[in-house]
Image 1 (tube, rainbow, N blue to C red):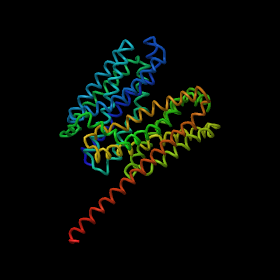
Image 2: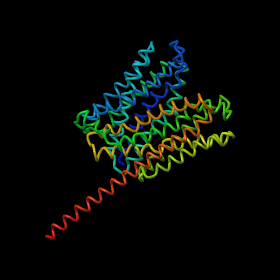
Image 3: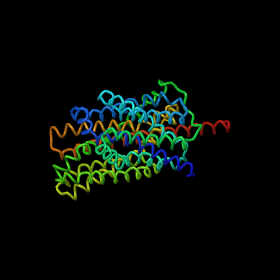
Image 4: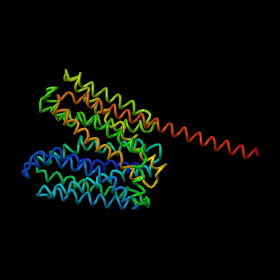
Length: 410
């Protein structure tokens, strides 16, 4: 890659790091927010749910609406809105204003992620797209490993408002970096919202959409309740739980990077087996939890498997749209992140049902079942794609034979 490509990749990584820190830091500040606003912790927790829901609903709609605009000015404008949203969060004195600011920030976050993926796809060499997209996704993982603990520390030290002044500052840094590295001349696609939403009339896109959702749901059914599981099942002392989460985050970085290598080598044919391995790993926790070392090994492997499919699915959606619905490429670039947020909500809900009606350790095999469903959907998608390619080759061969017959005058 050229120096300009490397600087662009670094900036897009920084952008997703900033977006991820702003999104995830609220999880570490729920107690402080609830105490400061004198609301129940469950109501404070609804801020996280509202963010995920707004992200999932708003991202595809607004990505489609904004796709007609040139990408550079659009990205800079949206980062500006992101900065304002974080400033409103930082000065919020009521739950209503705080909720409003999180909803606005969620929608902007989703659209910016889609645009970051689209810029990478349009400007970088084809053979580098998989690895670079995995680096962009890694920004979120690093946000959970470094950004969130730092933001939480700032909030505990200076009040939760200070954490969002911190994310506001990060947004300003990202705005400056983006203005220097985002290339000019990346035109939008002039198409109506109706034409772009035609993407969802293709059953194969709908089928593929739920592949990341089920895979992430499998992991998050366990991850959401990992802290109580560490305490009550593995008997990890409370003071060491943060270290386990740090270990999980570090391993998940490698998951994202390995996923980029898989995508570069025909990932769709491989991830159906990866999901089966994910199912086995999750289910293994049921047995390995009998010892601390065994449980930690299973948790590390869960982290290693969690993001292996990201780059493959991102390229699948974008390439498929490029072939069949070119005007919806930007919309297609948002589908992986939207699906992941749907999966987080699904996994958290499944975990809630299991913990209410069964034992904590039963999250392991129930999460494994979700991974099996992801494998089944990936297998179906792969077979459908192979069938479509075979039909296309037969048609091309028939046209070639017909042309040869005509050329010989028979």
